[in-house]
Length: 171
Image (cartoon, rainbow, N blue to C red; front, side):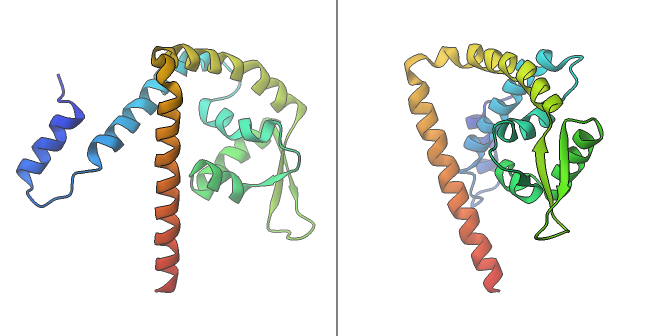
């Protein structure tokens, strides 16, 4: 059996005195939570016309009131532009989205979900939500506290990354 995140941190701290291991437990628990969600929803996508990453990109686009550019999608999901572009190309080829050149900037494509894309998301995503709901139901009354803590974590990480980006741009 593998050691717990706390045990791993203690082992690294012992083997590497002076190494800042404070983030290890948080990051490991986040990775584990993501893996557990992924494992839980796998069955929803067996034989489905879309993959989990594809649906993840389509969900915020499903009810978007205006076309969105790929860069915004990448920023929203914390993915590289190349990864988003590759996924969007697959979705476009299969008719789940359209990419229309922007009148303002021909280098930019405006992304919209097609009726077929909406139909596929509407068929799959409710099943994913049900699986996720069951998975998180054990939190009970603690779910708002967990959500608050995760929101704080995301805000602080976004702030730190923005600060680091500004500092890097200054040279």
